[in-house]
Image (tube, rainbow, N blue to C red; front, side, top):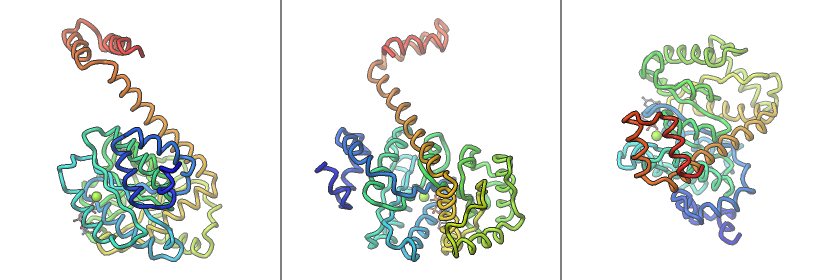
Length: 344
Ligand SMILES: Nc1nc2c(ncn2[C@@H]2O[C@H](COP(=O)(O)OP(=O)(O)O)[C@@H](O)[C@H]2O)c(=O)[nH]1
Ligand SMILES: [Mg+2]
């Protein structure tokens, strides 16, 4: 208890140290997370995902500043986790994050952490979930998690959130190759950033038709989504709890110009509207269950593989692979051989 007390009390240095322990997957990190877990569950977790260069970091930056200034949220402590699955030596995203840190530095209500993979994507998702828990227990009311929407690990990370924003930008191809269907399916809010660039309409139209494919049920989309959304938002401003008429959540499409901060207010309202929707519809409990279930499955998968690795030597693995390549054994037989060898 004494170890986690400073973290629970909001000591930033203690939190930063704990996060390092979590990233290293140390025994102290794990024990602390066990002790902290009962204190989690109070943060609104917001995932921000999309292809590299779509403007996720710029948007998160502006959103953070907006939330720290707006009346309802200005007392909230805000956590930002930037997950960069590329090599820590590639530099790009990390450099961008340094710029952001300088911009948001000086605001004691904002805590930023960048995480880079050390070549183990599964481990990155697990570490991210641990860091989210630590920030949640430390009292952050809103946690923004930025990930590059590409592989399975990013989908795993996106599943940690209550509200997922998928960021698109014009010019990445009319058919939006950059977005994987899996990511689109978990989108709660769609953002077309770089709306100052040509091709916004094309991107928006493509997104709308992809959404209809992904959610063929009762989702219909107004031709002019901005008007639809604004109507809703103004109603919402008067009575934030009045979301009962919504049976199915229709992901709104919001245009933004992140570098100017344009559309950020609308985005913040859409996020809030989604949270209110989750609370009112009972979806929050359901979401929480699904969220924790994917977290559990993630840890199970990873723990099983790492235990197996401890039991099977690289030589045994090589031997099985060699037999497989020589077609002395089938892939299934290779699996049996390796799992039996590990006593699993
Ligand atoms: N023209 C324009 N450029 C933008 C906008 N948002 C971001 N950018 C630029 O796009 C580049 C990538 O932005 P960044 O936030 O790092 O993208 P990320 O890789 O998705 O995090 C940077 O040079 C930004 O200045 C926008 O709305 N309009
Ligand atoms: Mg970024």
